Image (cartoon, rainbow, N blue to C red):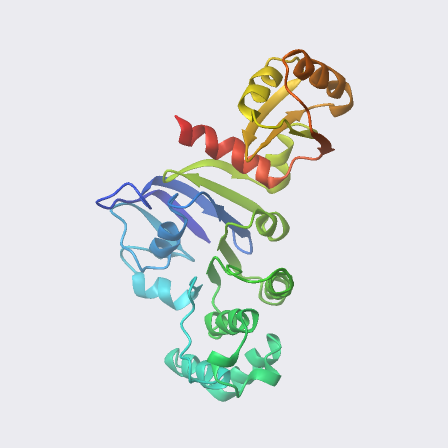
Length: 308
């Protein structure tokens, strides 16, 4: 459904540049774009949705060539941008009818009612969009982006700035979208739990390049079966160096006052870890054991690359 080959976009600055990325997204697949700020997530999405012209490579979207048939691409995609695009004084119903007319759909009022029902907007349909909450406005943004039944949907930070209940509500709507339409979806997000929950596969970008690509479960398995998290007090870097030398440690990362250790068997490693840190004069103020998360994958794949 989406195939990019050497897709690139360069600017006068290094920030947001995309350097020859190649990937495929199958029909009906939900794929997440992850990466630090400036990694190229939004730029990649803007190229695929024809808002930015690539400076290198090419891509096809639902069979339409990105460079030779941009109009064809626009007919089959839906885009929900970070900021949305509703007019403050327009009602939700007005916005949906307008979008249906712009897409030259038959019976635009009927289609607007369908989207109002699908996204639980019935009690909000005749209120100005400026009076809607953040979560309600994002539901309206989704409805607007899907009013013409696109086969490919791009969602750029769909839950940015939403509170946790609103995020969970929007996740439910995204799952229903998949079940109802079978659309191919690409999501850029900073919420790694969001990608873990919604995506079949994730692409992790750093400095404009794909540094990891697989299902969330497969990427987490690469880090080992367990993760030990330590609070080593004021010297996490020293604790990291001590722990990294221990047998059985697969990965270790220190940041934000904690050390995270990837290993095959936490029970076997706990005692040697605490003992080695005690001998090195590092105080262990807290310790917990869990499973690898997508956060661990993100840190393992992006932080080392950024430090080089």
